[in-house]
Image (cartoon, rainbow, N blue to C red; front, side, top):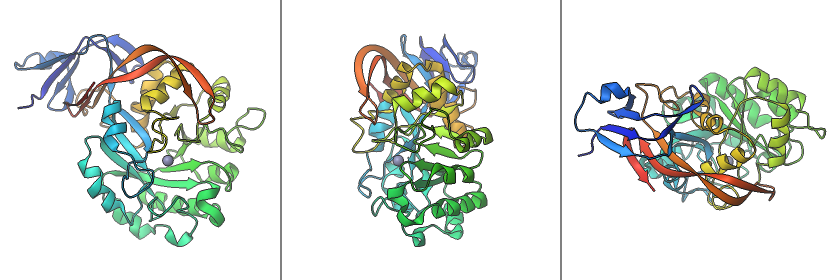
Length: 373
Ligand SMILES: [Zn+2]
């Protein structure tokens, strides 16, 4: 019988609430975090010695594609989830209203990794090619959306706003997504890339809590002007509380763009992978590999951990995750940082010599070990 009293001993806790790293034992009772003193009153405790590893609340990847067999991007969720120290992944628009139930039955219900979803505003999702917003008749209606909202694993909407996706539809799919999101009180994750539409049309439609993924791509017409200043519309969106997200992907993350952003601006953003079948080896690798790149670019470990825990959880309104707070769900990521000399590329093929690499050691979901290196 699986014990439901666990102590993770001898680790360094990275606490996203306090932005501290300190030697601290983590106590779990019945799948939730508990005070160590309380747990020690019990007998029959499973003690796991994580000797010198780091321990954090379970990592959350806000942008992945795991609708396998039905979309060409779909990858095995546990391969990029628990096996990489990621306890929760959010599929970003692979499924739409038309095929969400298939996604749930064939993937979500069988995965050890928690799978949430941004439902594509196109009812086809990505099951019939990657120009899902080129025909306005495919847009999900508000009525359809209201029915879908009953599904607890749907946490928002996805609208991929780049030229190859929308074709002649221009900004219209996002205008529709805005209407649906307002009716349902959902955040929208907007993918940005090559125009049309332009960011000057996209950003004004976004509200507090919406997410811009691929924010730091290296293509033309991005968030930065040629002089390296953020365009006015991006600046205003951030001021309103719109969140930027990395969404690394095959062609959507540039070291240069992030370095320029970092040198001038201090807005928080989340870190996600946009990982799928064709990029999980290169250039993306995993969420921890993406974090290793940002570590090398100068972001402190505790800040990076906060981005994939508390900040990610807040973005999709998960109050029970992303924290060590007593009584919240005990999803845990145990990892180490090894001295490596690995050269990791961004989506532009630019090389970065990474001296430190995050590697997963142990993954716990609701108090139970689901992966061990
Ligand atoms: Zn994507």
